[in-house]
Length: 125
Image 1 (tube, one colour):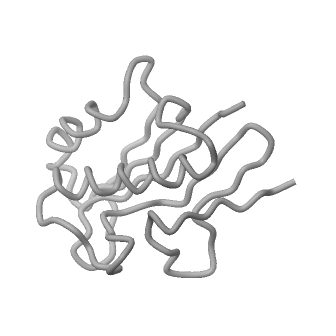
Image 2 (cartoon, rainbow, N blue to C red):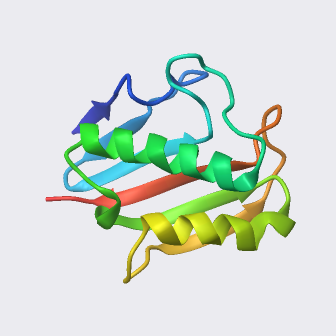
Image 3 (spheres, helix red, strand yellow):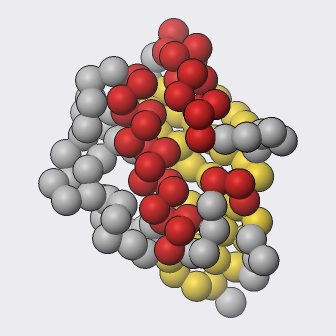
């Protein structure tokens, strides 16, 4: 049975989708970007600032589901410019610990001035 995950500490979905869903012990989060939950505006002009905000949004949604970043087993990262890969990794490594989640990184066209979007799958008992 699907349980919807929703917190006001992360941005509202921009369309007909959930912030996240829990199915049993698995948690699926929709792609999150560097959007301020209070204003709905993109935060930051650098990949570092945007990555920090994005991962903070992910943490907030996971917390609503009773999980943490330590529970994340898979991330999918969308970068507007793959040249930002190294700078993105510098922030990413501050949030995740070994064993790191498996990851796919894709160059993508993102909304407006977004430089990064991240979606995750987590396992939590």
